[in-house]
Image (cartoon, rainbow, N blue to C red; front, side, top):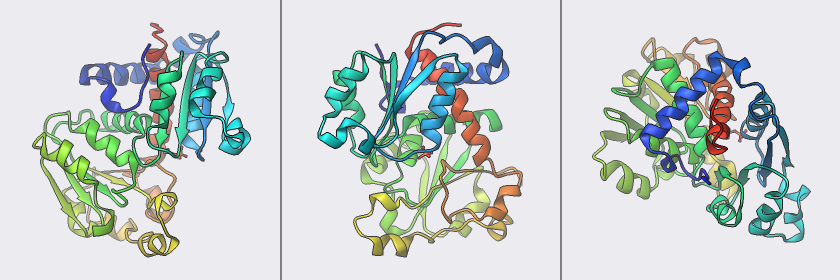
Length: 305
Ligand code: CP
């Protein structure tokens, strides 16, 4: 039985197969409509979510399966003190596979060790968000064809933004990818990503503060929100929250084929005026999230179509 805690749990070959499957699902939806007719997905969300939870549920329903779960810790027995390990032991009796989001780093890993069904980490604190990474990889590969040779700018809260950490780790395994890390000093990428991933693998990267300086060279601009829920005090968040705002003026500096991605939700970091720019790909990205989660469910349940 396999779980998914990090995108690194899959080899590059396995990742490529998963993305191939997701692309086949996109093109042949009806072929997959009943392959999980007798399966159930549990969504155990101890932290708020729109896209991840609903796209997992849509994914299972698109495969013919059923869903059950909770969307807040308060509405589960966690509110009475039940441990994650006990919860997953019980949920293993009700479902065939589970997606879990939790504010604590490592919670999904703890669950996987007590589980008798595959556990998917749907975000654990500021640590990892592997299914967002799979979504991002599928979006980039579908819209740009390949990863090789791309200059990818990651902008905003690179310290607490778990989607950024997972994406860098995953993309660093592909040849010829270059990163431009755009953040204020206080929200720079954690040293474990810089040292254990970028430096160790001799990845070409630069760190800059001004988006205007970085944007002309980028093939992909991955914007992120400042993660209010991970700040220790509100004052620091307020000071940082509008540090970057991507607007039409900044888009004029970008290549005409640059893509703008964002894991969403956005707050102020992309002006709504950018939404009508054909380079804005963040809503298409949310759609790709359904296909890749369908592919992931099939892969972890070992269902071959
Ligand atoms: N991208 C993402 O994880 O969105 P949600 O928090 O709405 O699930």
